[in-house]
Image (cartoon, rainbow over all chains, first blue to last red; front, top):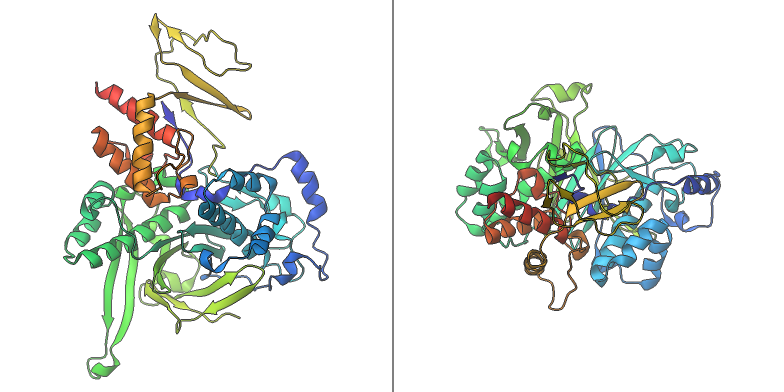
Length: 349
Length: 139
């Protein structure tokens, strides 16, 4: 007996299918009037949409959100169904984490309508056939937004939301120091591809091996989440993620040796159902404490994407946020580093 | 939470004859089926909107053992409420935790879980059901 269920990958999705009554109510709530509303959403500074090959990465640190008042504000923008799900969680930290995740998605998406105010509460979400949460744009026929793609990921200490236009997106974050209960190699033998197992086996230092493991894990997670077809479509063993180290240097002037972040590629081990040459990755180190992986689809009509040498980097805009309170643009000078993939940290506009 | 928006169920091909439950479907909590003289363990039917979720209930001891392992994996404090209904994610598990839990269960029960199942289990009950099913097919 096989029961197809939704993986914990999309755990904080709380998707409640839109009922007819909800739809009717939604129609009266989503008027985007083109003048300033004195609502909570007026303290969400609007943001330009990401361009092609651009990713917006928003994250919140639960430890920075302490005010009960603020948490209540977040509760207010959730749907009744989402609220119910949160109340069912018993442990306080987990409750808070779930709340922040939903609030982060709603407030982030609300920022992208620059012409008028969108009430974050008015978003409806649905799941695709495999359980991946998406915005239900059909409920939003009043707006003039192109379909945004988003994906969330969280650890107990960081909750992130990635946004892209024109490409599905998958993200995953993990604490760098996260310990496994199992032995890393035993775990890899069980779940990773042969090449990845080999890579890990060749790293002698346990700390470095753990870090490499986590990098691979986040990249693999981000890929499967970007694909949006659930784990069944791409079990971890069936594809290989490679980080190829690069050193580019001018042999005539060694002081100008440029370190280029490793290229990241993904290859299917067996099947060609998911042509994987179309996927691009970025791997970040955040605040010295987390790895974050982002996966988006290459634009097939982008002239830069076809040639190996001339690929254009992905522009990644990184923002730490406390929704309704403050946004901080994180540049490459701060504790955020691109450690894999062809990408650069763009300045926020 | 990750709720089942769609469930697809394929019952084993014993049913050349239609299943005839003794109880009606209107408000079922538990139905026991008898086919070809063989009694199946009680099947719990839950209606979720228009769809039904059918599962063969695992032994309580299995559920208990899964709870213990989950508590250990997630380092939950003593006395944490973990039951069959508990969803891993609601207990703080992310996808890596879930896979670790599955690996721990494989070792503990001496079973081998399908790749696809490893990350699609979301509750203690689902894990226990899967374990008992695998143990049964091994026996």
